[in-house]
Length: 114
Length: 111
Image (tube, rainbow over all chains, first blue to last red):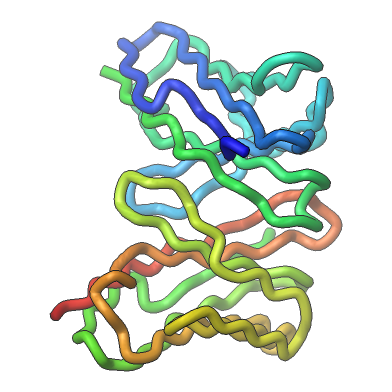
């Protein structure tokens, strides 16, 4: 079992460009969570998805950010028209059945906006 | 809104000493997690605490949970350099499917 796979590991974008972050959950896991970590801070919840459904997006900024978890393929966190303040580490986590089971984290994508 | 506070935020200690990291949270929760994060790396799950009075131990680390006091502790016994990392506690909001993380405690263990 390869674990939670995130790519790219590092992503550099200029202001105004789009960033796409990918997350492939562990095999058999249909619950995906995205978190953002700013330097020297804890992780902040962004969105919780199950296959094809957004369950809780209360942590997502209202503009420019979107997430999906299609029936086939990885979960995608999309940030449009990036700004410097979007620079952070973005972590994806997955579980088999929500938070009743252990949550496994990916290695994260470090987004740097120039 | 659930708030999770850890203290201390920074801890520098000598090898062989004991110390405790505290995690306080503001509202009722029935699950608490401890994670370890090495610089530039992802989070490694250490403990899941599910009930009042729960105590779990792994090697030199021991975690406990007091749901009435809304307090968890992570105790380090006879610290070794390999335990240097940032430690996070995270609490599940009751009725919701999200973890709220503390700020993290950066632990440095000096030889």
